[in-house]
Image 1 (cartoon, one colour):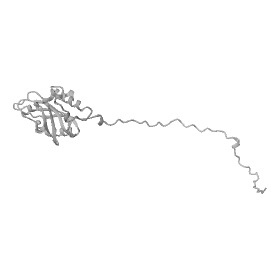
Image 2 (cartoon, rainbow, N blue to C red; image 1 turned 180 degrees about the vertical axis):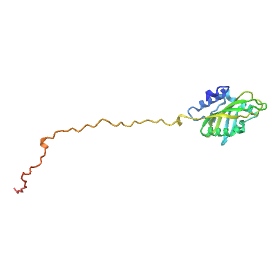
Image 3 (tube, one colour; image 1 turned 90 degrees about the vertical axis):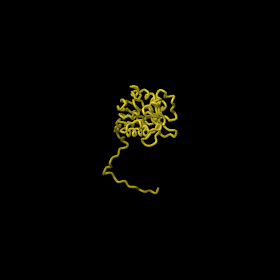
Image 4 (cartoon, rainbow, N blue to C red; image 1 turned 180 degrees about the horizontal axis):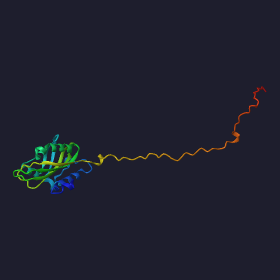
Length: 221
């Protein structure tokens, strides 16, 4: 994501994402309390933090000056969808739910069409989840950067493209499967029985028919 959004004047988005990744470390996401404005000075005017207040609805708690310039007014307390045209608001609401629930990060490509006193305006937005002080995923750290003359405000944008990236940690990866080798059957042929000559002392012969019968004679001697 960093390589893509650092081009064409959108470097503040890459800086904010790098800051979020550094705070996250090996966790799913950092906590809201860890965000320090001094760590994002270069991107501060474009940055914002929103709070989830209902499914698909996130309200701006903190917003940089660039966002107020786009709307021509103070934007704190307004829903993030205020920056989006009515036709794309449902799409942004669905994206917000994906970021909160999956959790995931998202990059959005935006465009504001030409109007009276409003030249065409291209913009990008990034969204990255945060945990609240209670441990639930109900905050998003994000940034909105537009390139070009803002013209007459307010400016609202269509969502042209969005890219969601589920967050993966080492703990969420499937465990490595250890292959256990089955014992190999011994294919050595069994030794053949050896025929040995029978000792003559153990031979038996059928008695001859003319042999007299033996009688047991009981003697009291």
